[in-house]
Image 1 (tube, rainbow, N blue to C red):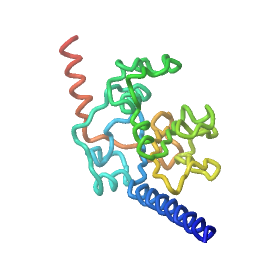
Image 2 (cartoon, helix red, strand yellow):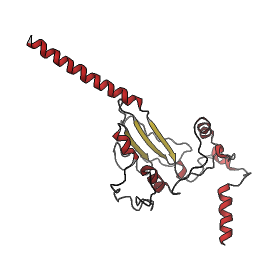
Image 3 (cartoon, rainbow, N blue to C red):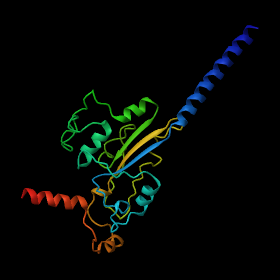
Image 4 (cartoon, one colour):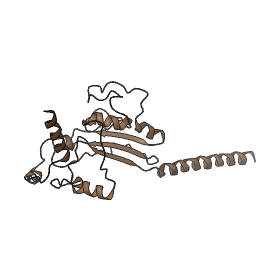
Length: 219
């Protein structure tokens, strides 16, 4: 009788634990995986914004099927300060990250919390991947370890989610923020792109035109 009671209690505990884990897994599955792709230092010279001389069919498709913002701004024209502002949710001057990379060894003030930390607190695995930090070490939840990208061959192939970067946790949602390097590069990436550059622009960028007018006023 005693053994039967012990076995019954043990069975109840096992079922309880399994039920809790199953419930936790179901809760985790309700949270969507989030992938944030960002092309740094890029203007609005895209076909979906009216620049027909530039061919961006995939971005145009994303714009037509998703949400396109017509009145959006960044707080800095340079990649890392702008990225810092988005990570923290406040202007980069407040976080002392406005001087591009000169302050990169200074720790973030404790009054500021990156939104990735908030995601981690609700069960997300958070990964940041940037061409400038991929060789700094294998630190899951911080950045990727990845080989140098090398000279551009006309295509962007990062391989960020290779099997050896095994950060996936099937019972947890993940957030991945990835900054794409292609907009930092010079060159045209082969003749198939060069042939598209022999064109006459039929319009002037509105921001360029307004800037010229401002310069003339102050000259």
